[in-house]
Length: 400
Image (tube, rainbow, N blue to C red):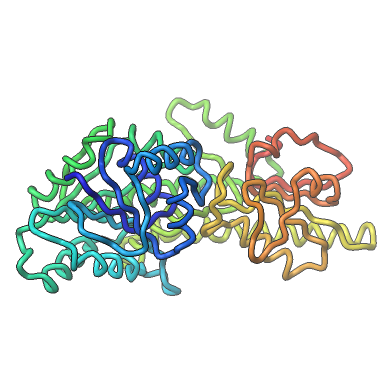
């Protein structure tokens, strides 16, 4: 395997393509967005991720990475496209299927086909069936596998190399060929399994995280009712040698934890009771926060007889990134704008502009606000001095 194609150049596809290119592979990145393609071919990036810009600039300059809008022949093909859910919370694998169809004409004997996109169980086998239906001569002649990413945004390049990977093929030969590809740049342990188990492993990891966060979020709402400082409580409880409670927030966002548990729930509704309840708790937390802000606005009007200025501090789904996918902070800000008559200032220091919100610099918003709402614990927020004259609603521990 010398030449590899990555379908999808987003938050996972581009970093993985760049890492592979930096370890000796000839990499072709495919994206349907011509702006993304042009940006990468200029040695630039369209997303915020530490050190990614420098790596892309280097591998593009060396000719190890280039971007195009259509696939081309290669030795290995990687599907790294979104898998959102539909209105009924069932997984939408149309992007995976479309990406698979796009590479079928270019597959040849001996090639490797890998899905990295988070997918429901059986997806890899379905895509293999699709390939072999269109190209029956490739049956038992190519390797098909599933290898989910497990990186933390903001630390992606490090974790792509250092983290263990779970790799599951539709047969043992497929697993071994996929492991051979990743072994060139992954320093973590490569764990072989089958495609079905690898798919469930990815969903299990994010469902576990979702359940742990749901406990913290539920606890924060209980503490608010009881008049207990949840941050102090968690710090004390975590002194127990076998307790490790996570930090609460204003909900759960991102394309993984906020989405993946629904793939299990929708396919196994009778069995996935706890997973479903955790997902509902984390979704409800965003509404609970919005309701608390609206109540604070009403109380402000009753006390001062004029509408407050509300600063919604943060839109991203986690600190210090620019990713707004499934962000509870974005949802909360939208509700405050639509359901109050307050002047609402929207702050997100990691983006310059937004199609739906006017972005205000965080210092300016903080100085103007009557009510400051901490939605994301971005590093610049932590150093802002507390002013007792302002009402502060801290949903993410900026003032803990």
